[in-house]
Image (cartoon, rainbow, N blue to C red; front, side):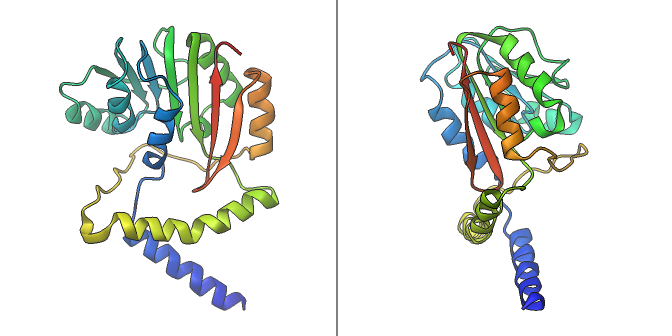
Length: 219
Protein backbone atom coordinates (compact mmCIF):
# COMPACT_ATOMS: atom_id res chain seq x y z
CA UNK A 1 0.00 0.00 0.00
CA UNK A 2 2.83 2.39 0.87
CA UNK A 3 4.45 2.21 -2.61
CA UNK A 4 1.05 2.91 -4.22
CA UNK A 5 0.55 5.94 -1.95
CA UNK A 6 4.00 7.25 -2.85
CA UNK A 7 3.26 6.84 -6.56
CA UNK A 8 -0.02 8.73 -6.17
CA UNK A 9 1.67 11.56 -4.26
CA UNK A 10 4.48 11.76 -6.83
CA UNK A 11 1.91 11.94 -9.63
CA UNK A 12 0.07 14.75 -7.82
CA UNK A 13 3.34 16.64 -7.31
CA UNK A 14 4.10 16.42 -11.03
CA UNK A 15 0.57 17.49 -11.93
CA UNK A 16 0.69 20.46 -9.54
CA UNK A 17 4.06 21.54 -10.92
CA UNK A 18 2.59 21.51 -14.43
CA UNK A 19 -0.56 23.39 -13.33
CA UNK A 20 0.64 26.10 -10.89
CA UNK A 21 -1.62 28.72 -9.36
CA UNK A 22 -1.28 31.43 -6.74
CA UNK A 23 -2.53 30.19 -3.37
CA UNK A 24 -2.13 33.64 -1.85
CA UNK A 25 -4.09 35.47 -4.55
CA UNK A 26 -6.86 32.93 -3.96
CA UNK A 27 -7.57 34.79 -0.69
CA UNK A 28 -7.47 38.33 -2.06
CA UNK A 29 -11.24 38.47 -2.56
CA UNK A 30 -11.78 37.20 0.97
CA UNK A 31 -9.41 39.86 2.33
CA UNK A 32 -11.34 42.62 0.59
CA UNK A 33 -14.59 41.35 2.11
CA UNK A 34 -13.12 41.94 5.58
CA UNK A 35 -12.51 45.63 4.80
CA UNK A 36 -14.72 48.71 4.42
CA UNK A 37 -15.71 49.73 0.89
CA UNK A 38 -13.58 52.83 1.40
CA UNK A 39 -10.84 53.67 3.87
CA UNK A 40 -7.91 56.07 4.25
CA UNK A 41 -4.33 54.74 4.25
CA UNK A 42 -3.36 51.11 3.75
CA UNK A 43 -0.15 49.14 4.26
CA UNK A 44 0.57 45.81 2.54
CA UNK A 45 3.45 43.95 4.18
CA UNK A 46 5.26 41.43 1.96
CA UNK A 47 3.57 42.85 -1.12
CA UNK A 48 5.29 40.61 -3.69
CA UNK A 49 4.41 41.65 -7.24
CA UNK A 50 1.79 44.10 -5.93
CA UNK A 51 -1.47 42.39 -6.86
CA UNK A 52 -3.12 42.93 -3.47
CA UNK A 53 -1.71 46.46 -3.12
CA UNK A 54 -3.35 47.41 -6.42
CA UNK A 55 -6.68 46.04 -5.23
CA UNK A 56 -6.38 48.02 -1.99
CA UNK A 57 -5.57 51.17 -3.98
CA UNK A 58 -9.06 51.08 -5.53
CA UNK A 59 -10.51 51.70 -2.04
CA UNK A 60 -7.79 53.65 -0.24
CA UNK A 61 -8.40 57.39 -0.40
CA UNK A 62 -5.07 58.05 1.33
CA UNK A 63 -2.96 55.77 -0.85
CA UNK A 64 -1.20 52.47 -0.24
CA UNK A 65 2.28 51.79 1.10
CA UNK A 66 3.61 48.37 0.07
CA UNK A 67 6.85 46.84 1.32
CA UNK A 68 8.85 43.72 0.53
CA UNK A 69 12.40 42.58 1.30
CA UNK A 70 12.94 41.11 -2.21
CA UNK A 71 14.56 43.72 -4.52
CA UNK A 72 13.64 41.87 -7.73
CA UNK A 73 9.96 41.50 -6.86
CA UNK A 74 9.73 45.15 -5.76
CA UNK A 75 11.17 46.19 -9.13
CA UNK A 76 8.55 44.10 -10.94
CA UNK A 77 5.80 45.56 -8.77
CA UNK A 78 6.86 49.11 -9.66
CA UNK A 79 6.96 48.27 -13.36
CA UNK A 80 3.46 46.79 -13.18
CA UNK A 81 1.97 49.74 -11.27
CA UNK A 82 2.77 52.93 -13.17
CA UNK A 83 -0.42 54.84 -12.40
CA UNK A 84 -1.94 53.41 -9.21
CA UNK A 85 -1.49 55.33 -5.91
CA UNK A 86 0.87 52.73 -4.45
CA UNK A 87 4.32 53.44 -3.02
CA UNK A 88 6.52 50.33 -3.23
CA UNK A 89 9.45 50.31 -0.80
CA UNK A 90 12.26 47.83 -0.29
CA UNK A 91 12.09 47.19 3.46
CA UNK A 92 11.89 44.38 5.98
CA UNK A 93 9.29 44.12 8.73
CA UNK A 94 8.91 44.80 11.53
CA UNK A 95 11.77 47.32 11.87
CA UNK A 96 11.35 48.79 8.38
CA UNK A 97 7.61 49.46 8.48
CA UNK A 98 6.63 52.94 7.25
CA UNK A 99 5.17 55.30 9.81
CA UNK A 100 1.43 54.98 10.40
CA UNK A 101 -1.25 55.23 11.42
CA UNK A 102 -2.98 53.02 8.82
CA UNK A 103 -6.66 52.24 8.48
CA UNK A 104 -5.83 48.87 6.93
CA UNK A 105 -2.81 46.59 7.28
CA UNK A 106 -2.56 43.36 5.29
CA UNK A 107 0.09 40.65 5.47
CA UNK A 108 -0.09 37.56 3.25
CA UNK A 109 2.16 34.48 3.62
CA UNK A 110 4.97 36.49 5.23
CA UNK A 111 4.50 36.32 8.99
CA UNK A 112 6.25 32.94 9.33
CA UNK A 113 9.46 34.63 8.11
CA UNK A 114 9.27 37.27 10.87
CA UNK A 115 9.36 37.38 14.70
CA UNK A 116 5.68 36.53 15.21
CA UNK A 117 4.65 38.34 18.40
CA UNK A 118 6.94 41.34 17.85
CA UNK A 119 5.60 41.84 14.32
CA UNK A 120 1.96 41.65 15.44
CA UNK A 121 2.71 44.16 18.21
CA UNK A 122 4.25 46.50 15.63
CA UNK A 123 1.19 46.13 13.40
CA UNK A 124 -1.00 47.02 16.37
CA UNK A 125 1.05 50.17 17.02
CA UNK A 126 0.73 51.25 13.40
CA UNK A 127 -3.03 50.67 13.13
CA UNK A 128 -5.35 53.67 13.44
CA UNK A 129 -8.27 53.55 15.90
CA UNK A 130 -11.01 51.52 14.23
CA UNK A 131 -8.55 50.13 11.69
CA UNK A 132 -8.39 46.53 10.47
CA UNK A 133 -5.50 44.07 10.36
CA UNK A 134 -5.87 41.03 8.07
CA UNK A 135 -3.26 38.26 8.02
CA UNK A 136 -3.18 35.23 5.75
CA UNK A 137 -0.44 33.01 7.09
CA UNK A 138 1.24 29.62 6.82
CA UNK A 139 1.42 27.20 9.75
CA UNK A 140 3.18 23.89 10.32
CA UNK A 141 0.78 20.93 10.33
CA UNK A 142 0.87 19.40 13.82
CA UNK A 143 -2.67 18.43 14.92
CA UNK A 144 -5.10 15.86 13.45
CA UNK A 145 -7.22 18.77 12.24
CA UNK A 146 -4.24 20.24 10.39
CA UNK A 147 -3.48 16.92 8.68
CA UNK A 148 -7.14 16.40 7.75
CA UNK A 149 -7.34 19.82 6.09
CA UNK A 150 -4.07 19.12 4.28
CA UNK A 151 -5.44 15.81 2.99
CA UNK A 152 -8.60 17.51 1.74
CA UNK A 153 -6.57 20.29 0.11
CA UNK A 154 -4.42 17.94 -1.99
CA UNK A 155 -7.10 16.86 -4.54
CA UNK A 156 -8.74 20.31 -4.42
CA UNK A 157 -5.39 21.91 -5.19
CA UNK A 158 -5.05 19.74 -8.30
CA UNK A 159 -8.63 20.52 -9.38
CA UNK A 160 -8.15 24.28 -8.98
CA UNK A 161 -4.81 24.11 -10.80
CA UNK A 162 -6.40 22.29 -13.73
CA UNK A 163 -9.31 24.77 -13.87
CA UNK A 164 -7.14 27.88 -13.74
CA UNK A 165 -4.67 26.57 -16.31
CA UNK A 166 -7.15 25.50 -18.98
CA UNK A 167 -5.62 26.64 -22.26
CA UNK A 168 -2.92 28.46 -20.24
CA UNK A 169 -5.17 31.53 -20.06
CA UNK A 170 -4.64 32.03 -16.33
CA UNK A 171 -1.62 34.16 -15.32
CA UNK A 172 1.16 32.02 -13.91
CA UNK A 173 2.38 32.94 -10.41
CA UNK A 174 5.47 35.13 -10.26
CA UNK A 175 8.34 33.48 -8.42
CA UNK A 176 10.08 35.13 -5.50
CA UNK A 177 13.85 35.41 -5.62
CA UNK A 178 14.37 35.90 -1.88
CA UNK A 179 15.17 32.91 0.32
CA UNK A 180 12.06 31.35 1.88
CA UNK A 181 11.65 28.87 4.70
CA UNK A 182 8.83 26.63 5.90
CA UNK A 183 6.71 27.71 8.89
CA UNK A 184 7.76 26.53 12.35
CA UNK A 185 4.71 27.46 14.47
CA UNK A 186 1.62 25.27 14.57
CA UNK A 187 -1.88 26.74 14.47
CA UNK A 188 -2.63 26.33 18.23
CA UNK A 189 0.59 28.19 19.11
CA UNK A 190 -0.24 30.89 16.56
CA UNK A 191 -3.68 31.38 18.10
CA UNK A 192 -2.29 31.61 21.65
CA UNK A 193 0.33 34.20 20.70
CA UNK A 194 -2.04 36.19 18.51
CA UNK A 195 -4.67 36.39 21.27
CA UNK A 196 -2.03 37.53 23.74
CA UNK A 197 -0.94 40.41 21.50
CA UNK A 198 -4.30 41.13 19.85
CA UNK A 199 -7.16 40.46 22.29
CA UNK A 200 -10.33 39.52 20.43
CA UNK A 201 -8.52 38.47 17.22
CA UNK A 202 -10.49 36.10 14.97
CA UNK A 203 -8.38 33.11 13.90
CA UNK A 204 -9.34 30.31 11.50
CA UNK A 205 -7.69 27.41 9.75
CA UNK A 206 -8.11 27.58 5.99
CA UNK A 207 -7.74 25.37 2.97
CA UNK A 208 -4.58 25.29 0.87
CA UNK A 209 -2.21 25.31 3.85
CA UNK A 210 -3.22 28.71 5.17
CA UNK A 211 -4.77 30.30 8.27
CA UNK A 212 -6.27 33.76 8.76
CA UNK A 213 -6.25 36.40 11.48
CA UNK A 214 -8.60 39.41 11.54
CA UNK A 215 -8.32 42.08 14.22
CA UNK A 216 -9.96 45.47 14.55
CA UNK A 217 -8.35 48.23 16.61
CA UNK A 218 -11.55 48.88 18.55
CA UNK A 219 -11.28 45.48 20.31
